[in-house]
Structures are given as C-alpha cells and as structure tokens.
Length: 206
Image (tube, rainbow, N blue to C red):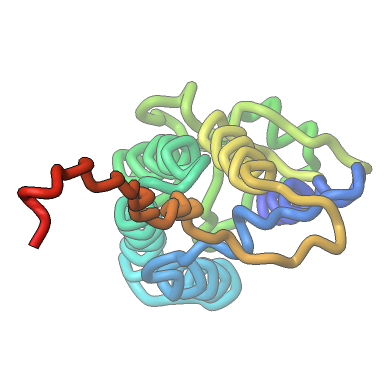
C-alpha cells in the first residue's frame, strides 16, 4: 500500500508546479491490462487465504506480468527503472518461496507483527538475497507504516521519471503532433526575354 501511495504521489507531483504529466497520460501504453491484473491479483493474495502453494506461486506470477508489461513498453521513459525494481523484488521473492524477506528491525519499526498466514513480506529464518528484501521502514505511527525494499524505491523512482517526462503547462491539452513538413517553395517559371529581330537589308526583305 505504501509503494502504491508513493507512486500516485509521483504521478500527481507535476501539478505542484502548474504542470501535468502529459507524457505519461497520453502515451499509448500496450497491454496495460497486465498491470491492473497484477494489482488485483496481489490484492486477492493478501486478503484471501489460498490453499497450498497457490498464494506464493501467484505472488511470483504478478511480477512476471509486471515485467511483461515493462518489456512491451520498454521505449517509454522510466520503464527500465520500474522494470529493474520489479525484477529485484520478483527474483528475491521467487528465491524465497514466494515471500519477500524483511529485516526484523524494519518490521519492528513499522509495527508489523508476524502471523501464520501467507504474507508477501515477512521475516524469514534463512533468507536468500536479504539485502534486496524489505530492509527499510516507514515507521509507525506514521500513516501507511510499512517496510520497503530497494526494488520498491526503484519502482517509485521510475514512476516519478515517467510522470515528469513530457510534462506540459496546465491548460495545454494539445496532443503530440508529427514534425512539421517543410514548406515547398512554388516553382516560378523563368521570365521570357524578348530579343529584337536583327535589321535586314532591303534585299533580304520579302
């Protein structure tokens, strides 16, 4: 929830200086349904008890979907930064059985208590790549207190870059247009020059 909130703040941040994220909002995003599916599935995984290994496997698949979206939109500004963050989180989650390892001190600072149910982030006994896990904390009692990772920072940074790329002044709703075509100068016919006929003698005249 913390990362989502920070991402939304990044999107609207240009408004603070009288601009709006035209490059982000007007871009023709491909396969954007992948992101919505990933967010919805993650919400289900966190709030619904799923049997067996379905929850951790589904959690990993949401990052696969996010990386797929990043790949097909790789030319857009900021996407590679978001992809780097998603890959960092995704590979760490996959190597830790579907859970992002959290630092015990970060979890304590954020006021997060361990439970027996599946958690997308939790303190693990023998984590793999622990430095890529949730080692930072947005401490309690701050709003949305939670832990976050290096990958989360990259994701928010990438959204920030995408939001500020191609910003425009408020009120300018024009869409991007192609480069102007060079104007062709009309061809002008060369002027007709009149040459007087040479004088002829009386013998040459008809």
